[in-house]
Amino acid sequence: MDPLITYKFQELFFVKVHIFYLVGFFLLICNDKNNIFMKLLLISNSTNPGEPYLEYPRKEIQRFLREKKVHALFIPYAAVTFSFDEYESKVVERFSEIGHYITSIHHFPDPVKAVQEAEVIVVGGGNTWQLVRMIHDNRLMEAIRLKVSEGTPYIGWSAGSNVACPTLRTTNDMPIVDPNGFECLNLVPFQINPHYLDINPEGHGGETREQRILEFLEINPDVFVVGLREGTMLKYEDGLLHLIGTKSARIFRKGIAPMELNASDDLNFLMR
Ligand code: ASP
Image 1 (cartoon, rainbow, N blue to C red):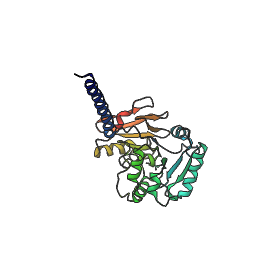
Image 2: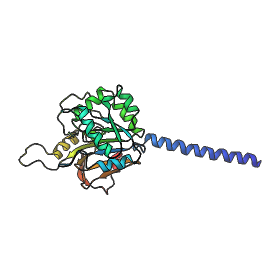
Image 3: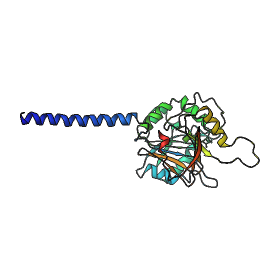
Image 4: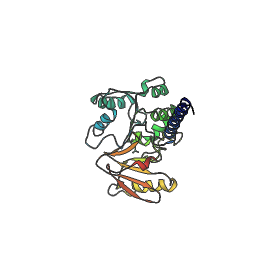
């Protein structure tokens, strides 16, 4: 055969192989629940007893956001007994100490647009029911989900971590308002129980946290629940999930004995 024709055939073959791999890679990214672009910092609690607000996670937030100054969008909707302005000023103070700006969404005339244009999304704790209600009322559930799945970093603490899960069903809060739907951001496929506590205070006869989670699992048997103890957080970056902090996390699932996993353990099975 004419060497030129052979060469052209070979060239075509290599182009096809490349296209095949590129399409394969693209499909893998699209189908993988493990979105490698997503960046999440899901913190159990804002403040440890006796410490200033957001003191213990401050360094981790700094590491997560890196050095370049960012302008983050704050979602204060979980606040019930204090104003959004008050909430914003506490968070602004902490963020400015680590070299970043943050503005609350209540200053923007179009909240959906604010989310679409956000550099970083930060969701504070408070009452989870009220938070979910306001996210639904402002039509932000889908907007945040989309923005974060495209790679916009997400930081949440307490209720803000709970709403990163498929639903709000593992909150500790009182249902003070109808949330207009239990579904949340579904950024991770498991549930978080923030502020996870091992024992009840002495003399308290109500259900322990573990008993409440076991009730959840009885009705929702296919879901993992992470009991995220105070002072700890989960970080998802570069397609990998890590526990940060000196305490272990207690992992529950129906039919499996609860597991205690530490920062050095592999938690990636939770993302599948
Ligand atoms: N109320 C908590 C918070 O956001 C959430 C919870 O305990 O489930 O701080």
